[in-house]
Image (cartoon, rainbow, N blue to C red):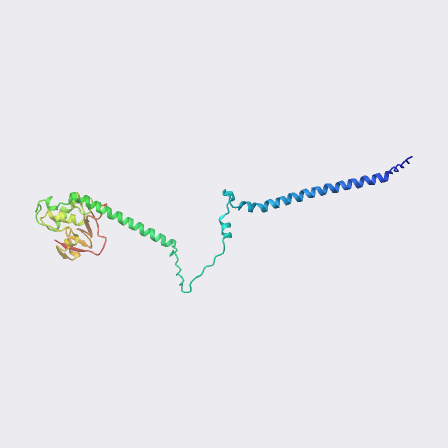
Amino acid sequence: MRRATPAAPAATPDVAAEAKLQKDSLGRRLRRGSAKNVMVMSVAAGLVGTLAIPAYAFAPGTDGIQFGATASTQLTKAAPQDVEVAEDVIAAPISEDGYDAVSGEEIRAAEEAQRAAEEAAAAEAARQAAAEQMTSYAAAASEYTPAAVYGSADPASVFAVAQQYLGVPYVYGGATPAGFDCSGLVQYVYAQFGISLPHSSSAQGAAGTQIPVSEAVPGDLVVMSGHIGFYAGNGMILHAPYEGTVVRTQPIWTSDYWIVRI
């Protein structure tokens, strides 16, 4: 006959409450431990992935540009080199580019020089154009005027004829009423008196007799370096001045002149 096992005594309310608290505390510790484990595993996985990237990027056999090493990386991977120089080698001389600083003043001077050269070239081109234009007036004055149209070539008669050409335009090389330069005017006027003069201011000045300025009368020649005209009285000159003007009378502008009578 089996003896009946006595039943466990029923837990008192205080013991049951304490057991429940211990169970809840254990559950919380387990949950915190699981969360920490998950975090540690995530961080570890990230570190492993990060460390694996360079090895994957530089792995041999990867052809994509995203897997290639940069030029700087290749240089850092280059093996060290040793360079040996023979003792009899002479160091090559060092050369430097010869650049000189240019100041603003030098630049302005260069610009002014270039501008002056351009203006001189333009003036020369205009002179040549005028000279070419004068080919239609190139015939000698005697071909237009018969010799000895007028009588004696006294200064007053010469000056009267010269006054007929006031207002004729200046033309470089001109020696007809279509256009005169300074010596062309003198040549054309004297041709009408049967006197042939060269087309040159210096040669015309040497063709006559120099007289004192105080004795000059209208019709005598006013001669200066590179220019010539007719004396018009009272310190005036009748002449063909320069390009862009006409035959006119004006005061003599310099004291460096002399009087010649043909």
